[in-house]
Image (tube, rainbow, N blue to C red; front, side, top):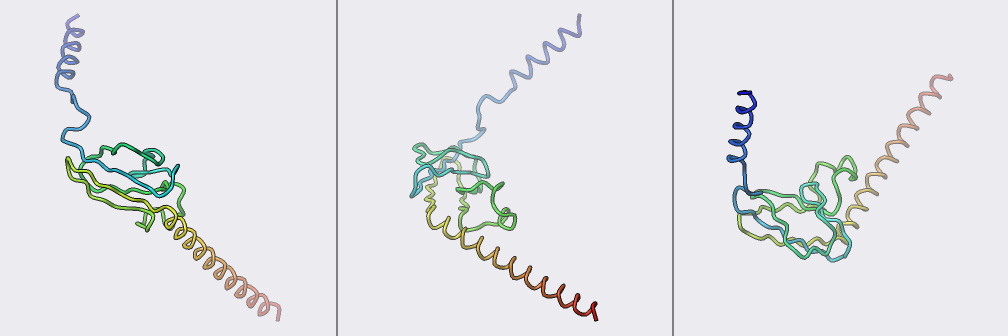
Length: 141
């Protein structure tokens, strides 16, 4: 019986000592604008919403990465790199940072990087086939 009262008492103490606010300090805000509607906005890899976003997004003080593409679907060689599609901002406590995403130019640049990547793959495959062909010729003699 005493064990139940001890557990109940410890739970009450934990509830009294619990965090009451979401933010322990004043949050900063990121206000995201875009040149296109219905663009998904990701902050630190988390989907926040689609443009237009009318209210600033509350974030903790520090460095944040804003992009229009999630890290999971980007190409593996771009996944952990800071490309032009990703904006990096530092938000101070109580401050609002405005970010403009120019998605047309970002998408164009990302498509160009993909084309370059595929071109280098095709060149590598072609050179590999030439080496195999030369080895086959040498082995047949």
